[in-house]
Image (cartoon, rainbow, N blue to C red):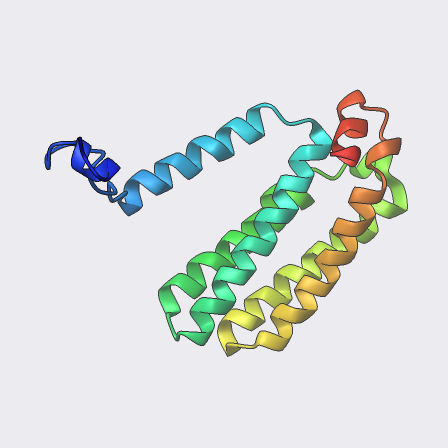
Length: 159
């Protein structure tokens, strides 16, 4: 009788040692998870995902900035700018949103400008400022979840 579970399997068994997962496999797995989240999300949840994506991109850019990895820094700050411009700002309803939409549009333009400056000058203070502004938006967005009229929003707020 084998003394340990590893002795139970032949050396060629996939259970005898951990299977290394390559970067491509992890990336594909992550992409499927993102696509699933997006396809099952309410409009409120989509905005929440965009906001979280912004923070993820800025965190990665900050790490790259500290590591002096110019390519990754630029890629991640570009992703953060695209989230703001093509996601959050593009989703504003300027006709029905009134002053709030106008103010958010201007704030998003300011954040985009500060992200660009952070990229050009390796300025972590500018990243902090952008994160502080976006954190206020995130908190306000999460506060309106139960009031949005969407049955899924009530579940999101209590989850």
